[in-house]
Image 1 (cartoon, rainbow, N blue to C red):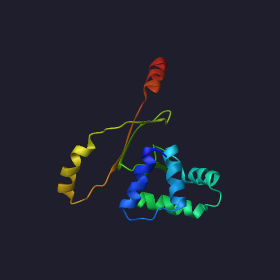
Image 2: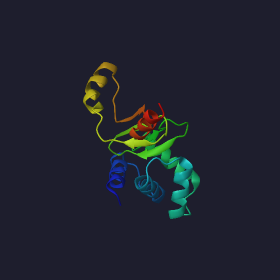
Image 3: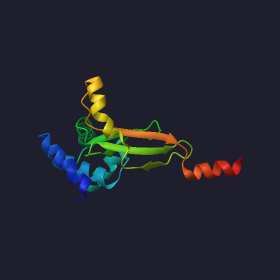
Image 4: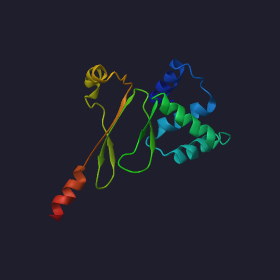
Length: 146
């Protein structure tokens, strides 16, 4: 099992949520492949464990999202994709032209959390950052056509 899956299971334990077989399989699927739509998660889960119902998968996605173990990302599209985020944070650079998403680790927002919490009274548990622009390939293609 991957480190992300282990962290996600640990987060469930800390939230005092029972780790059921469907929850474990959904977490394993999300850990093995990021940015899946709900139907893609259902398909992957049912390949691994055919007895797990579609409803169980959707309930698990909802639970993981509410607990902040999973985040919803759009990556510039009107399609909801799920990403396992047991550490609470996830970051993308999304090319507005080719729609490829590039992940990066540190964005510096964590340093702003205490200030944001003090100013707003909001308790921040994590963040998802999506920045949009042109990737190097699209910039190069754009400069060739000019």
